Length: 134
Image 1 (tube, rainbow, N blue to C red):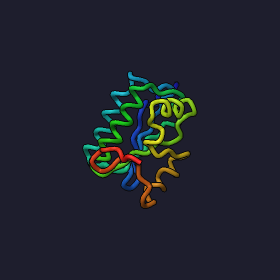
Image 2: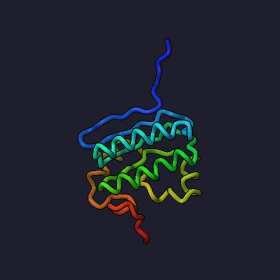
Image 3: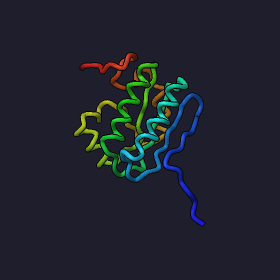
């Protein structure tokens, strides 16, 4: 008998939500489910969200767009979304799309969890969702 692994799994640790993406290829087909999951967390006023994309060898622009829009929505409530271990191919896509520096990236979930304890370690969006121009 084969175990069925869900495409997405949400865990809660203290005041953090961790969205685990169990996909090797994250595309437009799965983007709507990720959007729903993240929108629900943000609607529930979850301000500290970690998205673990370490299993993803590829993400398309629609999936990446959901991450960016969710980051902006989270910033509007004073929250943040941090990413765990994007693959080199994913990092290249993010760089080409101009979103690599928008997210804080971490090598492990534990590192991302600890990062929320550091004052001043926030993304490049203000609380109103507007990008900070440096």
